[in-house]
Image (tube, rainbow, N blue to C red; front, side, top):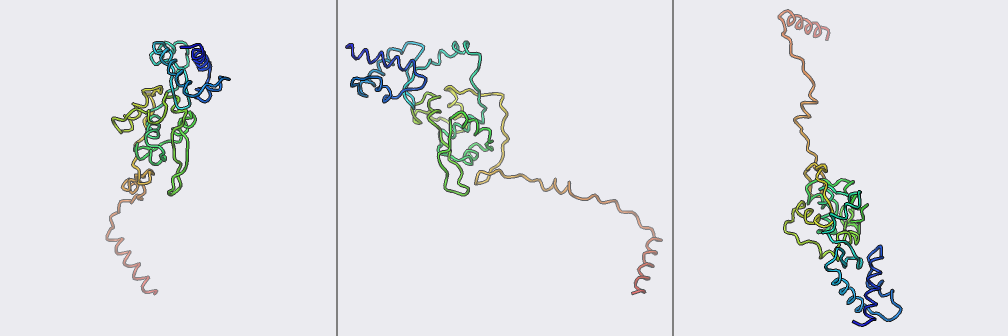
Amino acid sequence: MDDHNQRVIVVIETALLCAQEPLSVAELTRLFVEDVDAAQIDEALLEIQEAWSDKGMELLHIATGWRFQSRLSMREYLDRLTPEKPPKYSRAVMETLAIIAYRQPVTRGEIEEIRGVTVSTNVMKQLEDRGWVEVIGHKETIGRPGLYATTKQFLDDLSLTNLQSLPILEDAAPMAVADQLGQATIEFDASATVETVVELDEYGHEIMQIDFDQIAVETMPEVEPSKEVSPESENKSDEQKTMINDKL
């Protein structure tokens, strides 16, 4: 390796180690005044990857470019330096994210139909606030519901280059999908509240279950027990009827 190529590798390696965000090949070419093309940059990146193959850091190609990051095997040690634990997400959040990732673009109603439970606004807000999902359009149907899809931030956080890099599904059930997706850098919250299972109609809306028998019992007026009528009262009643008829 000549001095020029070695210099290119050192410059790129230094830039990636110092960068706060992933760097694309186009951005890396701006490091050099002389003519260094994309092919030379790619070759240098592969050599850097090889040089770091036996270290605690690795060079990865993700959706928005190249970046250095610690290996998963180093996580247990690095966690001791940071008292703040990474956020943990409930099963509901993870299942919703998994469905969006594998079925995108998808509407909220379609997510509810797949999961068999209602998707709370808080679940969608967590995913949007985290920058993992976004509305990319609207479905041409009644109400024009929003179509959700994952973002580049989602791919970056899971160290994926593109959606084709997602784990291959062995089980299409939402819980199994969430398990596979959660094997990367996302943690589950085992103590999260389980959502109530409801029945949905063909549009993904909740079907209200009404107990008509119970309503009838609750709204039925109380009937006082009938009193026995004595012969005297019957005679008085007949006399009253006769008097009324005479007046008429």
